Image 1 (cartoon, rainbow, N blue to C red):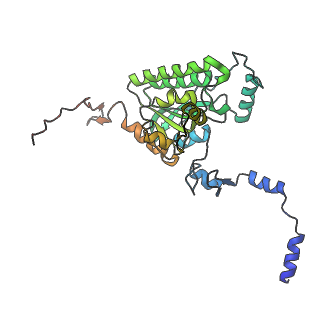
Image 2 (cartoon, helix red, strand yellow; image 1 turned 90 degrees about the vertical axis):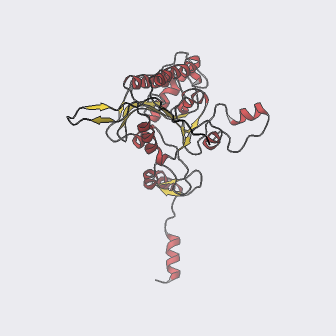
Image 3 (cartoon, one colour; image 1 turned 45 degrees about the vertical axis):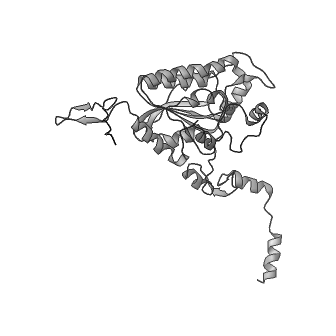
Length: 314
């Protein structure tokens, strides 16, 4: 076959239709990074915890995947799965709140915007709450507040540290004051957790804003953030209009907040589980158990403060 005949046959071949192209993309074999536009084999991307292999951009993930990444296999026990939101105010905008709830539940297979449970992180017991931005923008309503409060109270009772992965647009306006009061309720539970000498670590992901930022997201003993996450209270345009000045380009990013002392560390997602495990081990309420020759274990007492040696005069 001549080269001319080969080109002629190529012209006669059925062109790839737009529908076929969209179907091949929709199969999910490849994922396009929204930051650098590089196409990555989805299996490779998932093995890197949905962090772009080219530019390091952290793609958005949701509650189920976050739990799989953080909790040791076979140790996850969900709690309060039957709590469901209602429409106490009969709120209606363009669509009733009840209809919005049903649509979100059907779309996500979630009852509300947070999943809570107990499990192990590298062998350490923990109470974990994970917010899911798919469900009405991760907004905090009565059920979100109640589930997080119950998680914290149970963790306090069982002497567990608490980790909450935050991803939210803020308080849910369709529940009015019932939503806003969750800020104080969760904060009160965290204060009792702190008084018990237990660790609380919020993980701020993209985005963490509004009433969540104004309450439990910023009450951690150690506040962890993912790279380039948007973290703030009011929106950027609102702040600029209020201050009547141009804000820095990196305003309300993890890096900006770290530089100004609002977060303690920025941890890439691929290092998050290891970092949380280290923090939990370092902040155990007791020292590691020592074992006598007869097999009896006891805790080694560590004094709250050590005597300081006088510094000799120069």
